[in-house]
Image 1 (cartoon, helix red, strand yellow):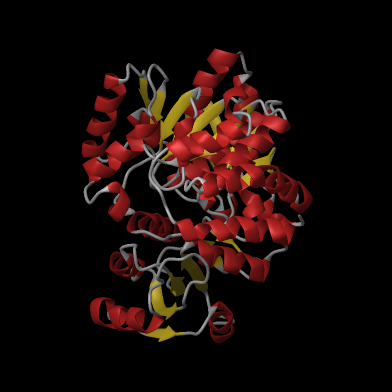
Image 2: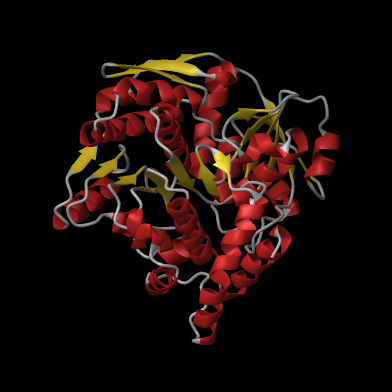
Length: 426
């Protein structure tokens, strides 16, 4: 099996859709020798910020000398990005080999009427890869939710919840407390849980679930979130958290909040595993997370602001770094997000909109023409619909512009500007 055949086999499983539950994932892993039982996980859930927080922790642990795995989703340009060790995406050859190792188990389950889904198989592939490579820590990012997410079959060293907002409401519920309950499903009996500051309703739910599971709860101190960041454009910032001087190459005020959570977890890991805290802190400077407030070579700013919270973060960063400036905003998103609110928020920094369809995925994307009508009626801002991102880039060449929306769109944009290796390897 070559890489293309392995990729096609994996994508063939998408027809089985999303299944909420852990039984199939547990069976698949057990058929593969239960590789997860020999790994040390840091399990991370949340509506926003989980990828950035995980990337910081991965960089810190790597810098401290630990072989570190990082399982994340979705990917930007290649499925290989979901499986990184010390920042390097799995090779095409190794990926094909891993899929080949699982085919027998998948086919047996399929014949029994329990075919694993795409995400269930990628989760098993990650555990198998990290076990074979003898990783010492694994950053283990949930997919959609928490309680019934395939990643939730593991027993981690600690559980992490970055924040809660309304998302995937058809699966997670139509209120903050319901979504929080689903995310809090990663909390295990007696396993410490780390959370950031968030909606008080969500906090109350998580605290209750932690108490019910006798899970020690650690929350980022308010004073850390008030840290004064010295901002050096889109290429970095420095600030102080407690006794730690932090330098990040990641832009945006939101990264201070993400770093605060990462540092809280690092303090716990340093104490539990006798790790040099100074080495962990120094490692934060090497954290990268493509597609988040990332400047392209021509000055275009790229961000995966796909929901209202993400859009607000983008607007805040732009207003801080480029006060009184307005941009051509190229946007594309999926219809199951609150795109109306996203457009309203983005109008604060938009001189005009250019709307594009989103390629990839099985969800319905927002109609560019309907988005044009929305921008005109709700924001009073001119807008144009384009057939695709390439057309939009041609139409806006030379303009000060921001590309944002779905991470699928971010991945497509990154491929226009950067070589693949700069996207897949972090």
